[in-house]
Image 1 (cartoon, rainbow, N blue to C red):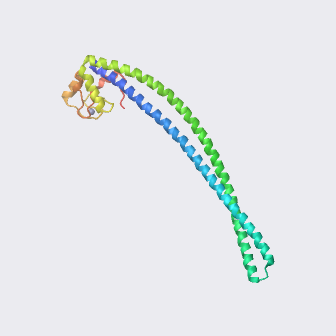
Image 2 (cartoon, rainbow, N blue to C red):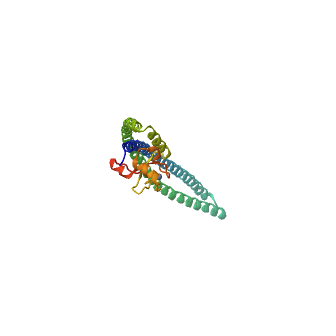
Image 3 (tube, helix red, strand yellow):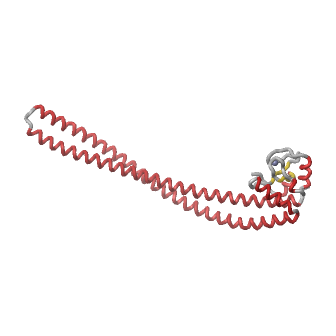
Length: 251
Ligand SMILES: [Zn+2]
């Protein structure tokens, strides 16, 4: 039932589908590399965060240690002063001051200890972050390498496909010069999916519009391609039995 022209149009479409698949794969590969680059960047920024947290922690500890030294020095001064005091009221003021300073020193010392624990935790985290950077960078190298190899193959294949396409177009145009124009128009209007199967009961399998008997007849004959258009979606229709000729898969 199906015409030679229909067969050639389907063959052309198969080449176009391979070209589209190649382009999609190129996009996938490019975004896989970009995603891995982001993973490396993220690991680096987490490591930088850990570094900053460590610096802050060290500075806080230095500040506390300084306060402890100042307070301890004052305790020494106050204790010396205590020995010279005769007045009960003054004695009370100085001993209270010494007591407060010692409390302050104790508090600061326990804060320093807590800070050291936190610092250990942060340093551990930093080591993890640095290991993570190494892992992600290694992964990036292999993702990039695999992508480059596949991209080279796809590009070489693309050149072959363009040559195949040229021949397929020539065969279609050799049978009917207007058929390729109709195909190309449908290709552009459908953004790369120009053909649709028509079922035995006359329904477009892309948009499920029921076609009128006039179109059904033209499609069944398969010679007047420019009039094989589905009025619903604008695709060029071919009779369902044309499918046996090739693996026309729907996307
Ligand atoms: Zn349709």
